Amino acid sequence: MDKYYTIEKHTQILIALMKFHKIRKVVVSPGATNVCFVGSLQQDPYFQLYSSVDERSAAFIACGLAAESGEPVALSCTGSTASRNYVPGLTEAFYRKLPILAITATQHPGRVGNAYAQVIDRSRQMNDMVMESILVDCIYTEEDEWACSVAVNKALIALRKNGGGPVHINLVTTYSKDFSAKELPKVKGISYTADFSAMPALDSFKRIAVLTGVHPKWSPELTEMVDEFCHLYNGVVLMNHASNYKGKYGVNHALVISMQQYSSPLTNADLVIYIGSIPRYISGMKNPDCVMWRVNPDGEIRDPERRLTHVFAMDELAFFRYYVELNQDKVQAQNPGSEYAGLWQEEYNRILSQAPDLPFSNVWVAQNTINRFPADSVLHIAGSNTARSWNFFKLPDSIECYSNDGTMGIDGQMSALIGESLANPQKLHFGVVGDLTFFYDMNSLGNRHIGNNLRLIVVNNGKGTEFRIYKHPANAFGEEANQFMAAAGHFGNQSPELIKHYVQDLGYEYLSAATKEEYLEKAERFLTPELTEKPMVFEIFTDSTDESDAIYAMDHIVKDSKGIAKEMIKSIAGEKGVSAVKRLLKR
Image (cartoon, rainbow, N blue to C red; front, side, top):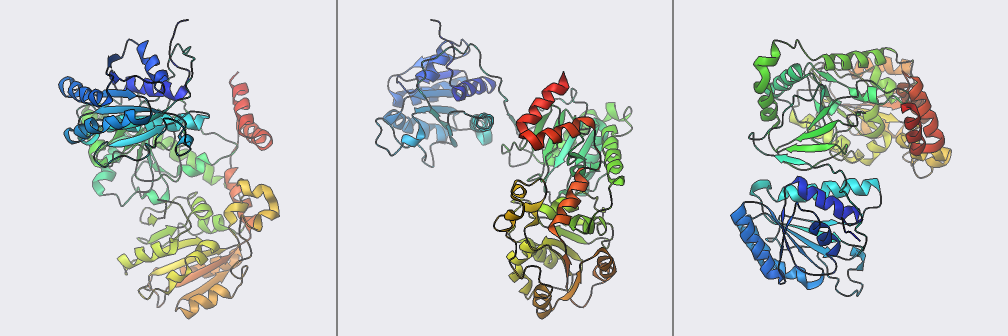
């Protein structure tokens, strides 16, 4: 019977990505646990195989091959002590920065430490032996397959990254005897670029989205260059408040992609360029052929949307300047501006203009406050429901915004606000937090360095309202979710006195509101542009049902027939049902 590739999917992915990254030469040592890998390579004419019985010798042969050919060279050996004999050669490769890929085969990792024959622990490596070490395990789900592909790409990129060096892959095997796979799977290779000698072309991309996550203050030069890039290449900047982009081509896309019964036709970009840190909101692109490029000096592989194809280890300004200067003369005369950004901004304004009357809630407070902040002040928004509520609405350009979006946790939101306020005592710093977030970090308000430029909104609904929002999994438990999941009833159970007395005793001016009318009346004082004698705390009492209803209303402003069908099926049959509907609608 003819032999082709092993049916082990993770081994197929490794082989396919070796081809993508142009790793052709392999020095093979005999064994049983590497039969699936080696047997697959033997029938593929792309690979050049060399045999070496002694693994110590094999590693040095690989060093010689790599040094003379200028190509990366792979090694393959079985489990047990065979891999230990690679140590001298890999150490040599480490100090010479030779791109040697050591692929050591292994049995199921759970067998380590359980007295299985020929099973040793390779989970830790010597400091000066390899640049990267990963485990490539069996694949059972789509997420396993994606994670395997990302990890292997990361390892193979490390062979050449930052001057290059040896890399280790511990490859699990099931000892399959089935070599019937005639083709390798389609894989997503990730390219790494650290200079301008091999920058990919943009000619094939008709619509480009720049997705910016948490981002430090933008320099005027970077803003100007991103705007010029969008102008030349029909681009839009998809942002949230913590992105701090203040240019001409931005849109708060969270409102658009949050629609539960409507899918915007604008989610069809060909390319998403991801800059900044953690993106609170994904791009929401529905185009299956859309790819993502990540631009960051750290050069790390980050694939939040599972569409990453390029990583550019360079400064954002340098990246955008390269493409602007590349085509500026040719394109500028033909392109009056970004049509794509204009369509996104029109879509956002169209949806927001149809927003219904909302109940008294975090969303309503955001809607009736965000345009009233004093010019040139700073806003800090906490996570979960607060961030969601405030990112529905556009923040004035003069307002800077921060959030603990690096981890998006409950910790330290007020402490971070305090730190921000201390950096510039003459600038007003506003914060918005929920009640659990407040009590989690309440000791910070007693810090003696706090000045009169700090003002805090506490939205108190007596629980973690995030867990009672209509679309949160915990809300399926109804009122039972309050006991533990939403942690209701703690901290005075919406006591009108607890926070009041605490902050007043600490020297704060205290305000409160439980209705829209009360809020609008007290907001005049809270939002005064002058520095007041004391810092302020404004406590807003809301109900979690109103909070959920407000989010539901914002998520259902516009709708179409496909969106209605999708949400209906999802509520009945879950995500699998949605997939079935999509297939039917395509017919």
